[in-house]
View 1 (tube, one colour):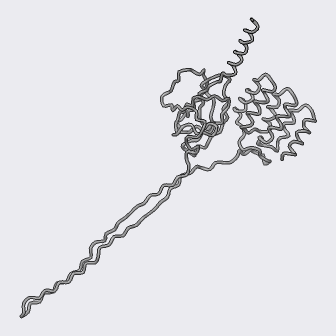
View 2 (view 1 turned 30 degrees about the vertical axis):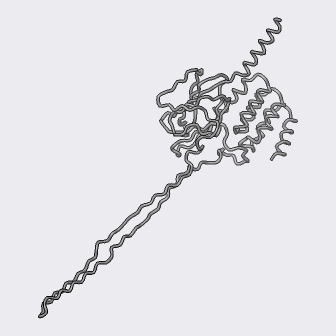
Length: 311
């Protein structure tokens, strides 16, 4: 009987752990008051541009973030958000780096409170998983204005009066020339087009002119967080699964692929990840760098055959 109770307790504990799901809130704000929109997984969250946005009710371990500024000259920001292993409220700052580029930086996180709090001037939205607003806030529109001008020239009146006094009395001859008054209408139409500012279509790597497998590699800080997440897993299968999940929605440099490969203990895992990552590597011409992570020449040969068949 005791064994049955223990078994049922273990089943209940395991089931509860599986059903438990982490929840997250994310806060984004600009240091200097720039207005922006938050887009998560391709869905725009706030209707109007704000300086401080809080998105609640997130429950996934990873989100693709895009920040669009109201001032289009400030550019756009793309970033992968990796959520912590327990429920939390994470705060990010949007600011300029030393190069003058706008970036999203992790600031702090706190345990998620059951009672929602809101800072003055903060716009709070519940996470939208489907489009309620157009993703692009500057969708092309046309505005037409019409100006009407009416001109009435002054009356042109000419008159002639002749008066003759004769034996038969007074003869008066009156002649008046009054041209018809006319109106002239001028219509002017102007069209104003509002559209987005064009941005580069891919990252440019200094000194590299080879083939490109994906457009925008991960930033150094995001890659560091990704490595920490993979390394924190105990089992090899879990490490490989998380690594593939990260790279499936990101772009890496060849040396970043190599660095992740070194986190795996087994040669088969390294080879599996190297094959999976080739199509998602920016500088494919530098893919020879991943060979440093292999222990056996046969692995390098198998990878080269795979690349040759998938070019």
